[in-house]
Length: 96
Image (cartoon, rainbow, N blue to C red):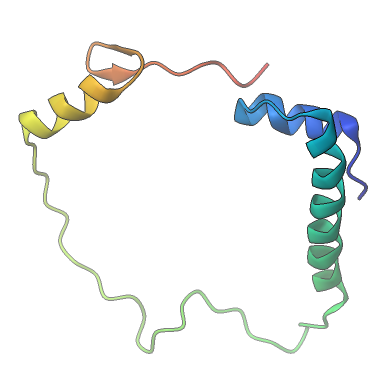
């Protein structure tokens, strides 16, 4: 996979970042190296390796879910959000 200006522009739009033209060139090279490294994982033969979901012996220890609500904490969080309505965050649309 090659990283081109179109890909960088799309990533910038999705992440709401402004990327200068000078930075785009170095970013294309850096992201290209990362993608190349990750594509190398396709060459590894894992046919004889059993799939695992955790490295802990005996599985993941579970705890009981307990619902707690502190209105002062949620009020503080909402007060710091750029946009809210009816105790919900308002975020920009990113899926076209």
